[in-house]
Image 1 (tube, rainbow, N blue to C red):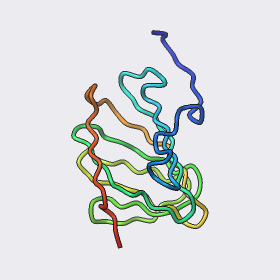
Image 2: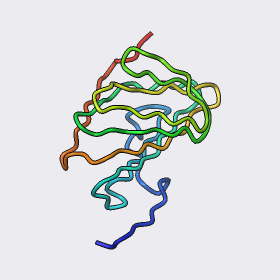
Image 3: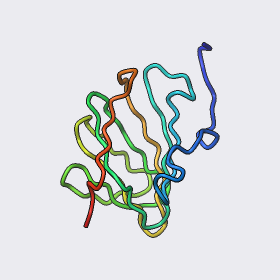
Length: 128
């Protein structure tokens, strides 16, 4: 393995394709051959809410809003988010996003995690 990797996030497969309408998810950890950090790209079409929430056992994450705006649900709290907001989330907090009228684009950065992963999907978690 090289001491560095250069990869365009938009060249990584969209793992949400066909599974979550209006959501694009490109997970970079494996693509950049990282042992310690994950970097991923998420895009939500205008007024789209993720169809599920998720949480972790040990992996802390931070999200950077790079375009658009919307809302983020953290456990039972809902917060407005806008371009250049940075949101740090402890592992056990269930989280999810909803895009505003201009859509929402995020970069997610995650710390070390077990090799087998530690994420839990929570279907139907954010419903009106």
